[in-house]
Image 1 (spheres, rainbow, N blue to C red):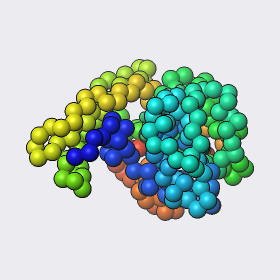
Image 2: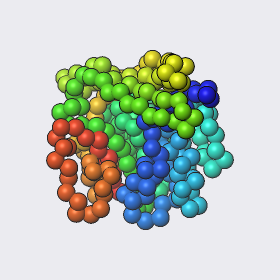
Image 3: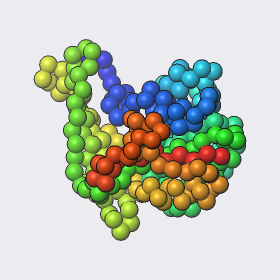
Length: 251
Ligand SMILES: C[S@@+](CC[C@H](N)C(=O)[O-])C[C@H]1O[C@@H](n2cnc3c(N)ncnc32)[C@H](O)[C@@H]1O
């Protein structure tokens, strides 16, 4: 049984960087090379990008130096920076700028989101895209928990609990927590309650669209069928109950 940190457990459970890279490349529609990953955490997406995209490079930004330093990669340029910093606008040029896993919710004021979107616009080459995800639909306001399990190659089992503890429709503020347990032969060998707790402003799809347009992006739209982005594929009717949406815009 290997020792796993909270970030290791996070990467193994809630992230699927290969799928995210393919999705961003498909949304871009050309041959993007340079990714700007903001709110990057341990930069798992950036690391996957440079391995998967021919000639790929990545610029990862996060406030938390410990997360960014989790697994350095020579082709990933890491910057410990606040995404609201004016320095961000100079971290270019990029073909894609991405804020993923609902990170845009870390910014609670619209002016901050607009400032971030403008810096993304400044960093992008002409034809580049910005991509921001969020969750919506009626379940987005529900309090509750979801437990998932996954068996590892060494026989251990990771269980993770995603809780939405608070959701205030008047302020659009939500509190979410992610807890982990690792079991080995039915015994709990790692227990990390509240490994990550997020206090987000839950930005809706139309709010994000509005901000991206105001920041100067064109062709701004939202995709809810993140697994089926072929042109002409109709939207999933389940979108009303709850969905994860990726909003993209082009410079
Ligand atoms: C939900 S995690 C997302 C991590 C990663 N993007 C992913 O796909 O899983 C949010 C990250 O945003 C970072 N963060 C929060 N506020 C920030 C800010 N103002 N500027 C830069 N990073 C910030 C946190 O340190 C954390 O790593």
